[in-house]
Length: 535
Image (cartoon, rainbow, N blue to C red):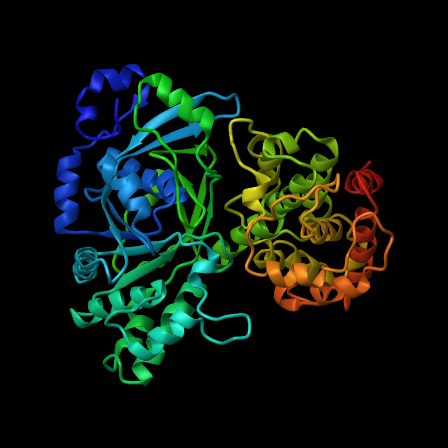
């Protein structure tokens, strides 16, 4: 068996293996999408394959839509050439249940796969053609939070953005400038309305996308590189709804690969990308999924509510996002990530068997976060948190690692912990100095940055854009000592670009120093510290 159209002609064999196939006429979908594209997505990674493409397949199966999704890679052809095109743009979704059973589904809703680079002439021209079609309703994104950044920490433009601002829309080198260039093509071709939908896991993602797009366009218009009126088009005829997306889609599992080989597949090899990602013709993911979207679409949209998407207003989306990112999921993930790496864990599910780590995330959620949680109404925070603690995180079938979650932690602390700290600070009924488990986790992150586990052995710290700078501040910290750590930690803990505020000014900096100092005294100091405050 191979994951391609030819092999799928043998329907009996596929169904005998318990594999669900698309329930629509895929050839008609391909023809209709080629003529009247409605949805272009940037970011061909696992969350798109496991969730977004599956939503559209659900609608195709129901007969609620007749077009698929066109997907484009943002910088490299690698995943397109090695994963998508050899398998006729088909994708095998393996849903992982807590009882370790699986459900396998061939996702056939992806109509085309392209690369968004001007150097790829045929693909670039096809993207320009797609943007000029009035039928296009949505241009969506899963490019990670970093993908929207156009400026460095010192507020200067990133080098590729700076070059594109000078050169204009003809052959941009940065991804976001390419997006704006494509939008300019649509403007010139008739200025049809469009919706730009960020589906990335970051706060107020629609506004973040809007700011980046409009800042590039405004520079071009002010310098005469685009026609007057382009900015007005982006303001009046383009929507930027906010969304909250949630589905754990870890790297492909070797266990699932073996299961598929036993089923008879011969083409399930892993591909390691140049950027450190890991892909396979299949994608494994948990069953739980949430997508809440601001219902602001200027050229229509597919009826995704029929596939379980919640449509609401921006205020509610913001509330859901804060509930998840600031209280019920992401802070707990970060705590498990840093302490998991320190204690030698390689699976989140295994960490949840450790009573100390379970109690840590339980206390961060229920004792500290829930007191200031945003209650959106459309989802219940208590139920959401309970599901994370009792079903999602302990799911042994999910091969999610603390090492993956620990990536880019410096970029996440402000929202994952800083917002709760600010809420305590603003509350007349709460005292920020009563927080224990959030500052303990921040101390754990600083301890993690040393790159030494709880036995004193070195480990590879996950990628982070500030890693070199942060480790430089900690260079004089010595494991196995009872040293004064203030000089080493002061610059980090007082940095509002990391935490959203100066932790010393609100009375937490000194406490974090105490926790950190306890964690560097020698082997098993991290466990002893956790036991002291949680045991």
